[in-house]
Image 1 (cartoon, protein in one colour):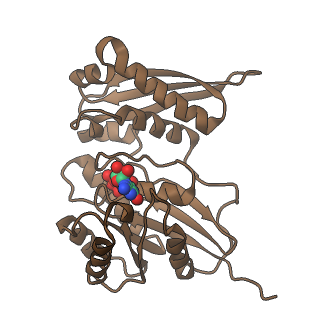
Image 2: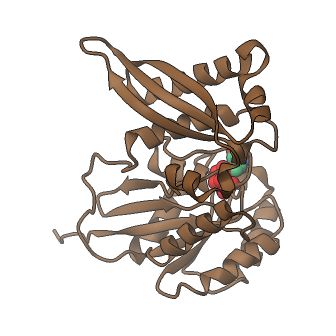
Image 3: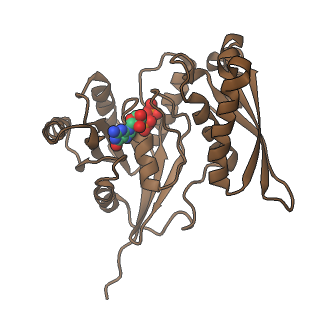
Length: 298
Ligand SMILES: Nc1nc2c(ncn2[C@@H]2O[C@H](COP(=O)(O)OP(=O)(O)OP(=O)(O)O)[C@@H](O)[C@H]2O)c(=O)[nH]1
């Protein structure tokens, strides 16, 4: 019997907003750890997931969408992207199959030239949402962007071709032992993961202008002794008093729904019943305020 080579390394997904990066990472890791939403640019943290295989360990760093910065928040997000890309072994550029390649895709593709160390894979996402012909045409168009180490069409939603992507990634990683214990699927601290679940619930059905204004912090997560119950104390931050009203809803109805939805997700993650104490607070114009951004971990 020959001994199998073990490889381990870091990969990341880039692509314009809504390209399907978060959904893909969740599908690969098999546990819900990054926020997904139909609203663009809602991924804020470089969350890591770990894919374990017998022959490899793939550490996934999820980066926020790369875009031309407008606000201070945008600039900081881009700085996170730059640091991440300088560090990884493989960069996967996600381009949806159901939309033509646009300036946003090209902008990001050009940026990839600045990271010669990393191998590059093109991932054509959402193949379930496009015809076979369309997928084929998209593969051709993507191939013409640059010399890729691989081009992989897949669907995170249908769970198709995910193994093909992993098989393409593994040979590009350096030889080495696993970087994380095999039980680990994420190294995000628990309170960050809980905060993301609450933020995701709060984003459901919210008006288009709100997503970037919502932030969640978790003060405490405490198990009640001898009981199958965890207390979670969290704050939902908005930028203006007017937004507070939108979040809370008529007679508190929206906030109640958000609380119920978030609680169900947190219970699923923690495996205990949860009491969620959720307060809505205003942090005036936090996206442009360095102090507030620091507090929210940017
Ligand atoms: N049909 C289909 N829809 C998908 C698939 N993957 C993602 N989507 C949808 O595309 C939208 C965007 O997906 P996300 O994973 O949030 O995209 P993202 O690239 O992380 O977006 P940002 O956080 O804005 O950068 C969501 O509505 C997803 O449900 C897929 O394989 N098939």
